[in-house]
Image (tube, rainbow over all chains, first blue to last red; front, side, top):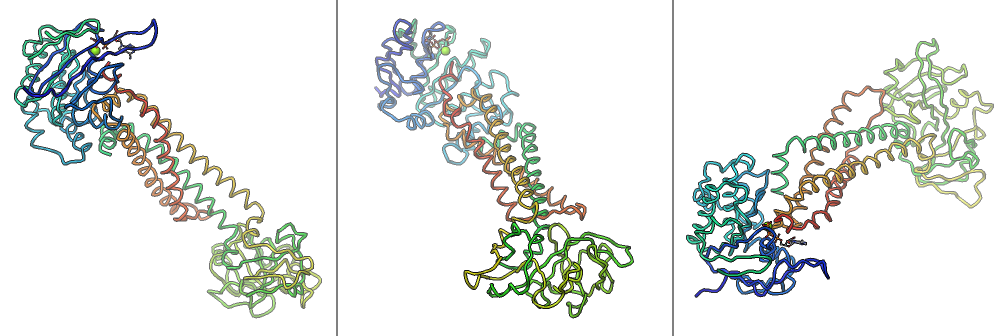
Length: 224
Length: 355
Ligand SMILES: Nc1ncnc2c1ncn2[C@@H]1O[C@H](COP(=O)(O)OP(=O)(O)OP(=O)(O)O)[C@@H](O)[C@H]1O
Ligand SMILES: [Mg+2]
């Protein structure tokens, strides 16, 4: 039994104070192991994005702990959290993940520039072909289809070799066949490369490939 | 750096336009500076050529040579490495036949004085009623051997030599000796120690004792500053230049700020990916410095090009040290302008990118 890459323990998140307070998450517990593809499913407004931003260290929980590879996130400085996001987390957003003025290859080069190392051409080529993007390596985001864009976002998230990938409704702007394609590829990456991947969705049809499913309703999270 | 340059490459029109605006500002800065230098030079070129350190005038003259009257004998109050008498007469230089006319600044000093220009053609003044003229006057048709009059009197003098271009109070100079000057002015005394002059020019001069008659000491810098119109001209042009620095800063600042507001969602995405404020600001800085450098370099090039084809009557002097300094000031304006967006960038919350 391996240790969780990412674990959230007794997370509560409240917005506002007094009688206007909204509780977005109540005592949420969560963990993901290397090689696991985990889905979080729930209706709109149930607290899915709040959960992901807390997991990524973009927001601090009202109470509870976020452990990344066993280290508590809240104890870190803002600078350390930024480095943590850069090195350990790959984020895939609903849309507009990509930088409009960089080509597909340049999106990856940027990661290397930030990490102050040379462009890993071989790794880029391999990931792009794995996700059937070799043809569009020199295209700009606005020249890609929605599905291609989301696949580039996946490559971008994987490229830096993070411990965990957090995907917030990665298929929201896609039709069903394309959504299934993107989710299949995510599952494939998790299983092939022993990555921990967490995907948020509200689409029941997309969770067939998932190893673990969490359901979230009104801020209450339950493991299925 | 990478982000900033890639964006400029992709948004060529946008960044070309702003570089163009900076180019225009840089061009106006350099043109104004060149004209200010030209005017300044026209006023003081002769003074700079003296390589003097002090001027002594009548204390009642309000620090203006043309209003100052002293006697040659007043030299007794002053000592210095070098001391030369000086008199001036601004008037029309004309040939006796009245064919050629131009306004000149006639200056007089003793024949062997350290401020008497070195003659490059003809010979130095060695007799009565001789003058030497700035080479620039050749273009107006004046030449060695001509008989000319200066000012309103009928006294005729002879051009015996020319020397390197020299101007004083925006007019080309003519030099003569003190006695000839006094005859040109129809002064009552035209020889000896009681002749009227305007003042003295010295190298390292000082008063011999605390008793020094009507004399007042001026540093050469004060003397130049008090040339009629000089300070006002320079101040006007320099104020315009300083305002242009502020305008450059405002343009870059506003432009970068508007772009930053526009790109907030993008910057949010960058922050989600762990690319922080530092890198985003570096991109903004790269862009504004790149645009400023393009604007400055082209502005300098065009200014130097225009200086070649400018009419000779337009005083214009390229001073590379000063242009370098102004380039740095424009660059600093670009850097500060970009840094004005720092707070906005720092305050972008990555959580909003997730929605
Ligand atoms: N910054 C905030 N301030 C106040 N309330 C917030 C804030 N962020 C989220 N909430 C509230 O918390 C609850 C959960 O929001 P969250 O964005 O996590 O939902 P979600 O499950 O991602 O919904 P969707 O599927 O529509 O994206 C909502 O009631 C929302 O109004
Ligand atoms: Mg959401």
